[in-house]
Every structure is written in structure tokens, then in C-alpha cells.
Length: 152
Image (cartoon, rainbow, N blue to C red):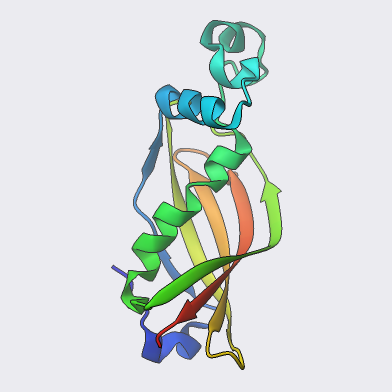
């Protein structure tokens, strides 16, 4: 559980705020994402072909599937904030660094980059998310996310 809370946000600016639990990326999750998004590229869903023809020798998760793991990992690390309202506001930067093979586990390392109070009562949190692939040196992705939080 994160030590981060509404009252101590500013002291964590520039600091890592935690590492999430591992999240499984099984083929079943990849297949479900392919159906949901209609992105049925063989490199994601055709196991035999991916093992035979892919440079990765296995199917890989969609980049946007890996990106979609940010909410579950962020909720875990930002749970101490306990806002009454929160919204995704967008991203400043996203880079897909390494593919995630089916069956892998990933986890998120979050660093708080900025806390920006706004005139409308919301607070904008800017966070750097580095999604690690278990057993690999290179991360799956690095994303700077923006979230709006309110306690009113």
C-alpha cells in the first residue's frame, strides 16, 4: 500500500511512489483484447504462426493492451489518495519499448513528477509509469500520465 495521501503529495514530487503487484498477460487476455478492439493481427492471436514466423517466437500482447494495465496498477499505488472524484486527463508521452510475450507478467513503477492545483478545485497529478516485464531488462513501455483528482 502506498504511503501517498492527499496531505503529503508535494513531498513526493520527483520521487518514486511505488511498484505495483504483478499482472498476468495470458493468451486469453490478449485474445479478449483482440476481439474487443477488432485488432486481430496474427502476431497477437495466432500462436502457431507467431511461434513459427514472429521474431519474438511467441504471440505478443498489443501495445495498447499493455497500456490498459495502467489503471489497475495505478489504483493500487494511488489508493491512499481517496479522492471523491478522479478522471483520466490524458498523456504527455508514451513510448512502447519492448513487446510483452503472451504468458508474461508485468508491473508498474510510478514516479510522481508534478502536483498542480487548478483554479477549478481539481489537482492534476503528472506521473511517469514504467511497465516492467518480469525477467527482462528493457521495460514494455514508459508513459507520462495525467490524472485529475478532487476531494470536494
